[in-house]
Amino acid sequence: MKRTALTLAAACAALFATTVAQAATIKVSCSGVGQELEFCKGAADAWAKKTGNEVQIVTPPNDASERLALFQQVLSAGSDKIDVFQVDVVWPGLLGSHLLDLKPYTKGVEKEHFASFIGNNTNGAKLVAMPWFANAGLLFYRKDLLQKHGQKVPTTWDELSASAKKVQDAERAGGNDKMWGYVWQGRAYEGLTCNALEWVASFGGGSIVEPDGKVSVKNPKAAKALQTAASWVGAISPTAVLNYAEEESRGVFQAGNAVFMRNWPYAWSLAQGQDSVIKDKVGVAVLPKGGADGRNAATLGGEALAVSKYSKNAALAADLVMHMTSAAVQKDRAIRGSFNPTITALYKDPEIVKANPFMGELEGTFTSAVARPTTASGARYNQVSNQFWNATHEVLSGKAKPDEALSRLDQSLTKLSKGGKWN
Image 1 (cartoon, rainbow, N blue to C red):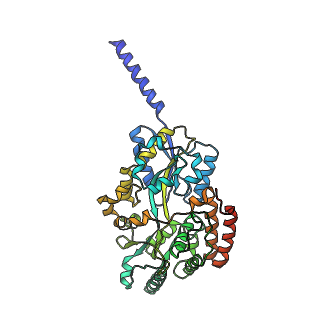
Image 2: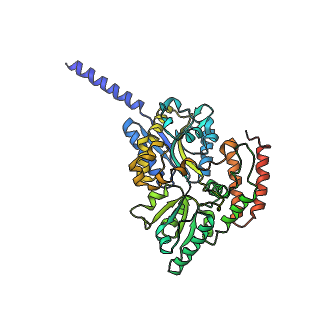
């Protein structure tokens, strides 16, 4: 009996030792924008508890351009310091050669996601990232202030300018000297590319580089779009907007000091928070058209999760990605954080629609948004975007006229494309 007990104890100890040895630490990058970090950590911790593994959260810079540069540095070095990367919708083509093919781990679940996102995340024959949440630019507005001052939700940029000015001036006269008409993302970074592409597309000015590789940004409609935006600075938008990213613009709006805001859907749940001074005072609409003959244009955004092919625990990292992008986790994020799912069926989920009324009403905005020219420009997209946002920033800050800036940009992008041949 004694020998049997000892043998059993030894076997248990050996089994425990094996289990401990098999446990791993998976390092995950999570953006700190809005509630992204909170929800990322929560889902990762739930997976760790379920599987017996450990998760370490790595928080990269919030600025998308800085984050991309960091990821490129880590991956190019073949480093295993990060196992799971949170990647922007435009990065799979730039980072794909360093990422693990996830197809062996999906069990076909990718068919439930938006086909466009899966296509975007496919590099050659490899599925290099799983969609995590969808994004598209939206117009947030103070419905209480519009009603108070007899204004309607604007359908064109001219209407927005006029309405923003009227409400801004009236509120300032009433005692709020911090009130501004419109806040958005004007810093020289990827967020400005998203805003400016919306302006240009809404005026019918193209998409910088067309699908056939032709540089199209030098045209009168694009120039008018940039001139319109430049007219806002110092008039209905603070000069400081030229250094605003998502959180800076949200901070002004949520403090009750802006009538309109362009931002991503995540801002909705924060505006509706219990401690928000604008709770129940906010409406959401599509972004305005460039004019009567223009169109509503929202830049396609979103984030995905990818696994480094240099990870020493690739299978576990892939399992974590599949958990974090699952329907159950996406539903929770949608209800509690107003993150748009990438799984089509969830847009019909009554609990999600109740928590985020605009998701059901504006589904078309998310499924037919304007894509940045990543496919056309390929691996050089980052250079295209960098040149575009810098040219735009020069116009917004009054350092260049639209025609001049777009003419220089056209020459530079044409040279970069080597005569339209990007790849």
